[in-house]
Every structure is written in C-alpha cells, then in structure tokens.
Image 1 (cartoon, rainbow, N blue to C red):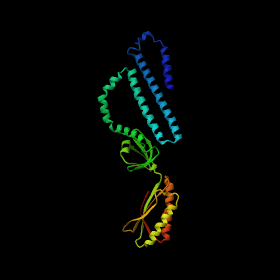
Image 2 (cartoon, rainbow, N blue to C red):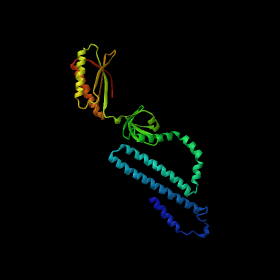
Image 3 (tube, rainbow, N blue to C red):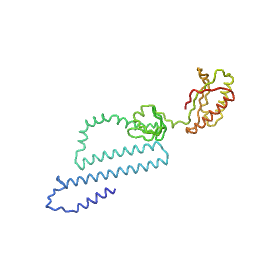
Image 4 (cartoon, one colour):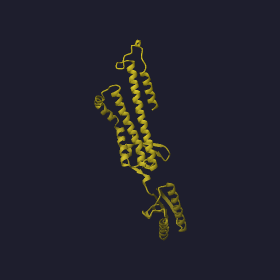
Length: 296
C-alpha cells in the first residue's frame, strides 16, 4: 500500500509540471521519454496492485489457517496452503496478461493462439511436473494421509511435514527431511500408521524339547489368563498363543496381542511389563526359554 501511494503521489506531482518547450519533448501518445515514463509508471502501478492482492491472499490464508488450527481439522489445515499458492499463481498469470494487453497493447488472444504448438511442447517437457500436480489433487481428495500423520512409504517412515504441488515432505525418525514426488506417493503402497487404533505385539518364544507338555500347557494358560485380565490388552482381537512349529532350536510358541493405545512409549512400557511377567511365569514353571523374533 505504501508503494502504491508513493507512485500515485509522484504521478500527481509530475502531472502539475510544465516542461519547457525548448526541450521539444513528444507527447505521451508518441514514442519518446514521456511515453517511456508513462509506460513505466503504468507497469509499476499494476505490479503494486498485484503485490497488494498477493499480500491479501496471504493474510486471508493466515486467518483461515488460524481458525482451522482452533478447530483442529488436519485435512483443512493442509488444503489452505495449497489453495493459497494456487490462487496466487492464477493472480500472477492474469496480471501478466493484463499488463501485456493494457500497457504494451499486445493482442492477448492472438498470443495465446500462437502459443498452441509451443504450449504443447511445453506440456510434454513438463510432463512429470503436471503428473505430480495432478497427484497432489488426488491426495487432497482421497485423503490417504494428512499433515502430521506418521506414514510408511516404501523404505521411508516418518511424519508428514508438508504436502506441496510437486512433492510430499516427510521428516524421518532420524529427523531428516525426505521429499517424495506426489505421483510416487499415490503409485506406491502408503501405510498410515497414525490411523491405527491399537498396536500389535508379536513374538516367538523357543521352548526346549525336553520340557513336559503339562508344563507347556500350564505356562500357556497362565499367560493367556494374564493377558485377558489386563485392561489395556484388547479383547476385541483376543490374544493368540499357540505352538506353531518345531525347529532345531526347540518348540516355537507364537504370541500375538494388541495393546489399546497409539502411543508407542505407552505401548513399550506395557509390553515390557508383559515380558517380565512371562519370564517370571517361565521361571516358576522351570521352563527354559529362547527368543526368535519380536515384531510390532
């Protein structure tokens, strides 16, 4: 606004000036210093107005983002920056054509028609960028993930920081930023870890072959009873404990249960408590254990 007011003040001041006839300056309708100054002034006015419009778009974007932040709507929160940038690009393109038609008196319709073949070549050259742009619209409409969600895309796992026109930025567990093209995000299998309502614990214990079957069955029932009586272990998906295989190391007993929490720290604490209870029960029953794998 300050820049626009400055230009208007300078223009009004210069309009009051009377140029000496001895300078022989041509009028503003003919090519000369006065026409150049007039065109430069018009260009500055259009640029300043465009600048004001872009700043207003930023302002309304900040206000909407603040309101969405109060409502805690992640889908709207990621859509606002995207739409703000899209509107700004449209405003810049329209301003460019208005400047060409108004100031430089270019036939915009003929110019656009003449750019047909060149535009086609440009589209081919920018094929990947257009594919990523369309993929970003697919992400916004389909909503497979939102800003802040913990996702796993291929070998990359982390929190979604930003969804842009070209790529999605993911902050990995090592606190680095990984940028993945949007087309690759929609073409690959993306696991949204934040959407789970509980966390699975899965592991296999090895029991020696010389362990009496009565002790194995008693050990299994005691652990099942323990898991069923814990209020944070899901009963919707009942705990699973069964002998699954025999190996060279011993009898393989599979344990699967779900802890009703999405907080990994809470999950780790409760899983550790269950591990200690399993070890305590095994010691009481004089069962020697080994461990093959642990998954979550």
